Image 1 (cartoon, rainbow, N blue to C red):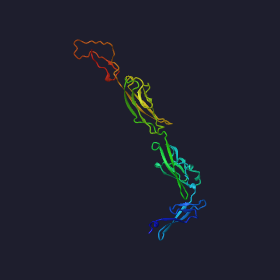
Image 2 (cartoon, helix red, strand yellow):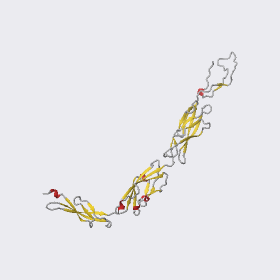
Image 3 (cartoon, one colour):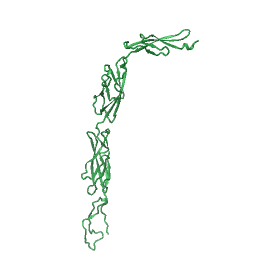
Image 4 (cartoon, one colour):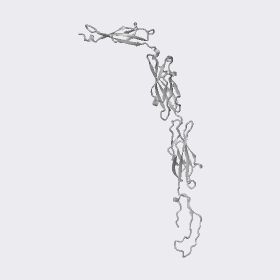
Length: 327
């Protein structure tokens, strides 16, 4: 008995395509022996596998089909593995943004290519013509929702072999200034004492802009309600502070219109009102209308008889107004 020989296989070519191929009898590796320039596009080889069994060997046949292809069919379809383009977020649906046929190699210029988006087309925002390779906008873009897309594009040769190639199209959606700065409220109320020092912060406003970095820098200004310049505002921080001494007895409140303007090429703005109440301090003495008063009263007048009415004034608020006492 020869168990080792019974499982030992040798390979032979029963049909070698006119000697173009050979096979290693031990490994079964098929080798090319002659150039295939003038050969048919499809060749068939018949391979015999035979064991070394004793006393009788056993064998079987299989057919190997060899497709002969042009070398250029193995070359990439696209000139590069990735491309970067920029598209404004307000571009109209149906706009052509890229022609992939211009990005293919000259070696495939005469071949029919089928183009497909295989991944990355979030919400179907892009459409690719399968024959022309033109990429179109297929849905409204919004920088604030998605500012970049990564489309994987496959280019498939329409040949018997259908070899394909892929490239990555990186699309940057650029922002336009389409959002107005927004304050949280239409009206804010603040209080400040009339003895506040110059430079004291009264209130801070804040507006938000949903646009991208290039369009959302906000500048604040006082546009109304500050004729004498009692207040100023930090243009970047939005801090309103005193610029002059206040006097409640002259002006008890201010209604400042504050504007927030972004830095877009076509700037957008909005405004809000900050109502500032000036609170009183007791900084004014009461004043009599006369320096001296005289009165006459009969000696028999009953207790409680009105003798004299003293009239005085105080510019301060009622809580800081006059109180009477004799001394």
